[in-house]
Length: 505
Image 1: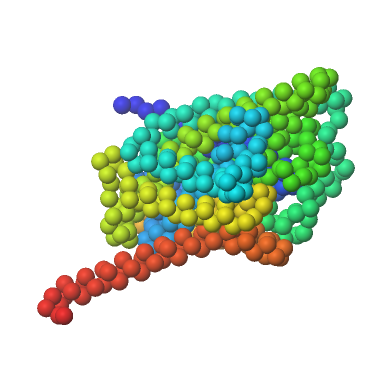
Image 2: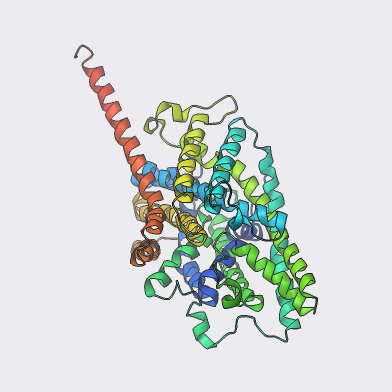
């Protein structure tokens, strides 16, 4: 049977749909304003492009393996390091579930009320963070219960969320340009020369340490390229199609992020809209969309109530789309990364119950263990006594760090991968050893700097709670993976000794 091969245009669309996230632009604008643009460009040049080409080589070489990045690492640096690296990669999805289970109630609230009301959800002596934490625990346990029983058909609604996201970008672009025209070409956030694109209006991003830490936000915005490495065997002339498609999509995504961040300045004055304690990294997208609708209403000289109604409609549309997308994604991500890792890795590294599948083909025990870990993290973060702003900064930083950390393993393993002699390499970009090592060093420096400064920034501000939760994910899960390995190796050693001396007491 003849299969259609992926051509450049199709690959570009795949990469853009995988990587580009509308909500990343609102977070960037809230954190750094126009100044976030330069960091997104730098992250594209020094992370997105070189790392994606590395992942393409991994994917083409290990195209028949079923363990994903575990197979890539195992073939490069050995199974034990691969297990630890992939376990940390799995932790990024667990942290994503922890963060999103808490954040999902903001689009839910926005859809119902037209704005984020979660900060007023105190009940029975519990503050809003604690109520959201309890709802998040209910969310993860309910979805795990359905997913364990194979009821994942609701995941298909994720495609509906994708349609909403596309429409969201279109509405945002048209509305922004209309506001610019109606306001006579004036931006709500004034541009005061080159300093507007270098200096953040956010007081929390003024020092060199916090500025460099923003790299992690930009790296997070480009995350997902490793998933593209597995489709090189389905491409038409992959040695030409992949680098061409990658370069084109990298340029489009970088321009898309930069232009979108810039356009937010048309409707949103940072000090007036974002410079208060009601705005946080959880509700920023809906605050900006509400303000976009309100500003459009003002541009048409509508009454204050009519403008507020239009702002509510914009926020509700964004909330509904994001809520549907989160719901669909959860039903896939609650089992897919875990199952692919367990099924693709060496079963000897796992306790036996973790690898067992139920009648629906789901690793039920492993999924409930995962749910328990998520519940514990949610409980301690939400009941930790932080403010709403700090609560969402913690969740966002946890997600950014845990997503960025596994790339350290993938990038650092690449020179070892290139030195393997017994591999068939149908696709190669990095052919010069010295240049390869130099580029790997540059990408690692960017990642280490971003992760390191993100971890150090709250310590310098004496915010030890944020510092702890920011970095604990990769460290904790890396330690758990090491304990698994030590236990299984010890168990294997005892079994081997018993086999050699069966009569020994």
